[in-house]
Image (cartoon, rainbow over all chains, first blue to last red; front, side, top):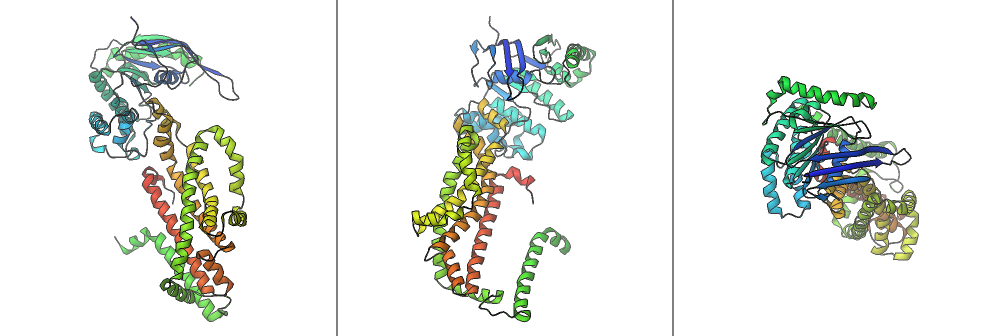
Length: 260
Length: 262
């Protein structure tokens, strides 16, 4: 049987003007099952964000195959939505109008859009801020809007590109817990790129550790912790052991790649 | 709130008003008591005020204003309709940018009023000639500011629209245009000043009515207070329209209100 998401031998080369071409991904392969929560960690510049953009359909790999549910990905599509690190909210739109964006671009009728937006704004806990503008919200609230917008189109795959990296530590912890709750009851397939070992270990079913550039799969670690997971679980010896295992795999790449 | 607090809060307004009244009073006193110049060669605020009152009651001023406004509105509207789309497409499409750039840069930098006689010859003495001149002067701020606005559009937002399958039209309407609006309005502020120059220069060259004509006519016949009335009315219009644009900027770009530079 073909896995839900299958990437095979993906190579991606950037050729900036007047500079040496950079190989971001080289022979990168990945399989993700339906409903699975997979994190990708790796040194800066290893191409993990680029891989999400390939999955999203915004960039085309130079070689290799990428399939979703057995069909090749050729461009953006209904079944995938991204949560961006810098939120990517339209500053001239209210929270509601931002959440409606994806539905609007898909030509959904205004009444249905509004209904769906209200539902998701409630889900992410922003009911009282529906008519606020992004500049009136805190970072955590902005990312809740980003999450609501991505979920509004009801995608099968949620792509998350370091979504909590711009948030302070406590907001981050809170958002991780809420993301897990939302994931547990929506059962989306999630691909989550992060720099944080702890975040990857806490959220994921599997953690993919990538090599320094050009990015390749270095190791895949299965996180066999029971679910639902709570914050207290992060204080257990088992959890620390998992973090240590990820760290040991990642460590060599951080030092050998010359990246910080 | 204490009186002191009130003045601190509104000091911008109060200091501005004070310096204005100080200047007017000084002007009046100097010309009355220190250099009592023949009113034929120079004038003072009290005489201007009298002329102002007289003109407001007459019909000619209103007629001149109507004539000039008509030409201004036509020229300015076309500058908006042509300038914004050209600037947007130039900013978004590199090939269009490279093709139009040399031509537009040269025209923007040149003193275009030098073309006024040509425009009057080609388009005639009436509304059309003046409107064409207003258009020529007012269109460039729209083009260049729309262009600069597009260049500063956040690429992340473009990617967001694309990731939801948005078309080229969606990119223009949902991201590029709204994010460029503050730039366009700043351009409109420049364009208002330039457009008014267009009207006045057009009417200086060849006209038999209009506010610019009224100013030259008053000057030619040594009616200095009447000339000042025309000039003051022009300034008031310019200030009014510019303030309107500032308000508009805060309405279309509320997220920029917080980082508004004083």
